[in-house]
Length: 163
Image 1 (cartoon, rainbow, N blue to C red):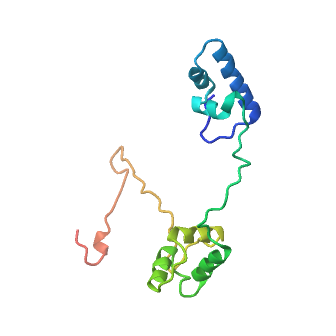
Image 2 (tube, rainbow, N blue to C red):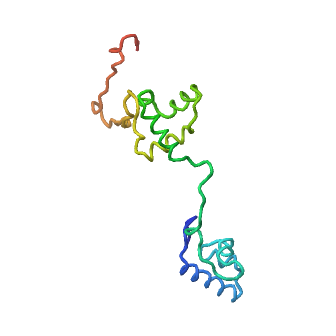
Image 3 (cartoon, rainbow, N blue to C red):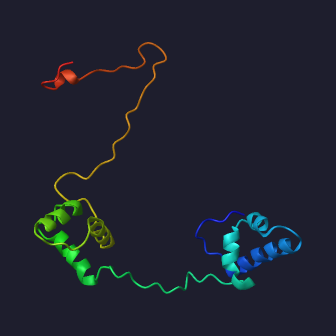
Protein backbone atom coordinates (compact mmCIF):
# COMPACT_ATOMS: atom_id res chain seq x y z
CA UNK A 1 0.00 0.00 0.00
CA UNK A 2 2.59 2.58 -1.14
CA UNK A 3 1.59 6.22 -0.92
CA UNK A 4 2.52 8.83 -3.43
CA UNK A 5 4.39 11.85 -2.14
CA UNK A 6 2.29 14.90 -1.28
CA UNK A 7 -1.00 12.99 -1.39
CA UNK A 8 -3.73 14.22 0.91
CA UNK A 9 -4.90 11.34 3.07
CA UNK A 10 -8.54 11.59 4.18
CA UNK A 11 -9.15 11.52 7.94
CA UNK A 12 -11.01 8.19 7.70
CA UNK A 13 -7.99 6.51 6.06
CA UNK A 14 -5.64 8.12 8.58
CA UNK A 15 -7.71 6.70 11.45
CA UNK A 16 -7.56 3.23 9.92
CA UNK A 17 -3.78 3.35 9.33
CA UNK A 18 -3.00 4.82 12.75
CA UNK A 19 -5.23 2.15 14.30
CA UNK A 20 -3.26 -0.61 12.56
CA UNK A 21 0.04 0.92 13.65
CA UNK A 22 -1.07 1.39 17.27
CA UNK A 23 -2.43 -2.16 17.42
CA UNK A 24 0.84 -3.60 16.09
CA UNK A 25 2.81 -1.44 18.53
CA UNK A 26 0.73 -2.67 21.50
CA UNK A 27 1.42 -6.25 20.43
CA UNK A 28 5.18 -5.65 20.54
CA UNK A 29 6.09 -4.50 17.02
CA UNK A 30 8.38 -1.56 16.52
CA UNK A 31 6.43 1.52 15.45
CA UNK A 32 8.76 2.20 12.51
CA UNK A 33 8.26 -1.30 11.10
CA UNK A 34 4.49 -1.03 11.54
CA UNK A 35 4.55 2.27 9.64
CA UNK A 36 6.52 0.74 6.79
CA UNK A 37 4.05 -2.15 6.67
CA UNK A 38 1.09 0.18 6.05
CA UNK A 39 3.08 2.29 3.58
CA UNK A 40 3.91 5.48 5.49
CA UNK A 41 7.07 6.74 7.15
CA UNK A 42 7.53 7.13 10.89
CA UNK A 43 7.83 10.87 10.28
CA UNK A 44 4.37 10.90 8.66
CA UNK A 45 2.91 8.96 11.59
CA UNK A 46 4.37 11.49 14.04
CA UNK A 47 3.08 14.40 11.96
CA UNK A 48 -0.40 12.85 11.93
CA UNK A 49 -0.40 12.20 15.68
CA UNK A 50 1.17 15.12 17.56
CA UNK A 51 0.73 14.77 21.34
CA UNK A 52 -0.63 11.24 20.79
CA UNK A 53 -3.92 12.18 19.12
CA UNK A 54 -4.87 12.01 15.45
CA UNK A 55 -4.98 15.29 13.55
CA UNK A 56 -6.71 16.19 10.27
CA UNK A 57 -4.67 17.46 7.31
CA UNK A 58 -4.65 21.26 7.43
CA UNK A 59 -3.04 21.87 4.03
CA UNK A 60 -6.28 22.28 2.04
CA UNK A 61 -7.58 24.96 4.41
CA UNK A 62 -4.29 26.74 5.07
CA UNK A 63 -4.23 30.48 4.44
CA UNK A 64 -1.33 31.28 2.15
CA UNK A 65 -0.47 34.96 1.77
CA UNK A 66 0.43 36.28 -1.66
CA UNK A 67 4.18 36.66 -2.17
CA UNK A 68 5.45 40.23 -1.83
CA UNK A 69 6.91 40.22 -5.36
CA UNK A 70 3.67 39.11 -7.06
CA UNK A 71 2.85 41.08 -10.20
CA UNK A 72 0.05 43.58 -9.95
CA UNK A 73 -2.74 43.52 -12.52
CA UNK A 74 -1.33 46.77 -13.93
CA UNK A 75 2.08 45.14 -14.47
CA UNK A 76 0.46 42.15 -16.21
CA UNK A 77 -1.45 44.49 -18.52
CA UNK A 78 1.76 46.42 -19.19
CA UNK A 79 3.54 43.21 -20.24
CA UNK A 80 0.72 42.26 -22.61
CA UNK A 81 0.56 45.80 -23.99
CA UNK A 82 4.30 45.85 -24.68
CA UNK A 83 4.23 42.41 -26.33
CA UNK A 84 1.31 43.44 -28.56
CA UNK A 85 2.80 46.79 -29.55
CA UNK A 86 3.85 46.98 -33.22
CA UNK A 87 7.51 47.40 -32.24
CA UNK A 88 7.65 44.08 -30.33
CA UNK A 89 4.75 42.09 -31.80
CA UNK A 90 7.04 39.91 -33.91
CA UNK A 91 9.62 39.27 -31.18
CA UNK A 92 9.69 36.57 -28.51
CA UNK A 93 10.02 37.59 -24.83
CA UNK A 94 13.65 36.46 -24.86
CA UNK A 95 14.34 39.39 -27.24
CA UNK A 96 11.77 41.86 -25.87
CA UNK A 97 13.20 42.01 -22.33
CA UNK A 98 16.79 42.80 -23.44
CA UNK A 99 15.50 45.40 -25.92
CA UNK A 100 13.55 47.09 -23.12
CA UNK A 101 16.62 46.96 -20.88
CA UNK A 102 18.59 48.77 -23.59
CA UNK A 103 15.95 51.51 -23.34
CA UNK A 104 16.30 51.57 -19.55
CA UNK A 105 12.94 49.86 -18.87
CA UNK A 106 12.42 46.75 -16.79
CA UNK A 107 8.97 45.31 -16.18
CA UNK A 108 9.65 41.64 -15.43
CA UNK A 109 11.92 38.72 -16.21
CA UNK A 110 11.80 36.71 -19.43
CA UNK A 111 10.17 33.74 -17.68
CA UNK A 112 7.51 36.05 -16.23
CA UNK A 113 6.76 37.39 -19.72
CA UNK A 114 6.29 33.82 -20.96
CA UNK A 115 4.07 32.96 -17.99
CA UNK A 116 1.89 36.08 -18.40
CA UNK A 117 1.53 35.51 -22.16
CA UNK A 118 0.58 31.88 -21.57
CA UNK A 119 -2.06 32.88 -19.02
CA UNK A 120 -3.44 35.41 -21.50
CA UNK A 121 -3.48 32.69 -24.21
CA UNK A 122 -1.02 34.71 -26.31
CA UNK A 123 1.96 32.38 -26.17
CA UNK A 124 2.00 31.42 -29.82
CA UNK A 125 4.65 31.53 -32.49
CA UNK A 126 5.74 35.13 -32.98
CA UNK A 127 7.71 36.58 -35.86
CA UNK A 128 8.10 36.03 -39.57
CA UNK A 129 9.83 32.69 -39.46
CA UNK A 130 7.78 29.54 -39.68
CA UNK A 131 6.64 27.81 -36.54
CA UNK A 132 8.70 24.70 -35.84
CA UNK A 133 7.17 21.70 -37.53
CA UNK A 134 7.39 18.04 -36.75
CA UNK A 135 10.28 16.30 -38.43
CA UNK A 136 9.89 12.58 -38.99
CA UNK A 137 12.80 10.31 -38.28
CA UNK A 138 14.40 8.91 -41.40
CA UNK A 139 13.28 5.39 -42.21
CA UNK A 140 15.80 2.66 -42.70
CA UNK A 141 15.39 -0.30 -44.91
CA UNK A 142 17.14 -3.62 -44.72
CA UNK A 143 17.83 -5.59 -47.87
CA UNK A 144 17.50 -9.33 -47.43
CA UNK A 145 18.17 -10.13 -51.09
CA UNK A 146 19.76 -8.38 -54.08
CA UNK A 147 17.73 -5.58 -55.76
CA UNK A 148 15.35 -5.13 -52.79
CA UNK A 149 16.49 -1.66 -51.67
CA UNK A 150 17.53 1.09 -54.07
CA UNK A 151 19.09 4.43 -53.09
CA UNK A 152 20.60 7.40 -54.86
CA UNK A 153 22.80 10.39 -54.09
CA UNK A 154 21.69 13.86 -55.20
CA UNK A 155 24.62 15.87 -53.88
CA UNK A 156 25.75 16.48 -57.45
CA UNK A 157 22.61 18.58 -58.00
CA UNK A 158 23.66 21.18 -55.42
CA UNK A 159 25.99 23.83 -56.88
CA UNK A 160 29.38 24.08 -55.19
CA UNK A 161 29.18 20.66 -53.56
CA UNK A 162 31.55 18.04 -54.82
CA UNK A 163 31.19 14.39 -53.88
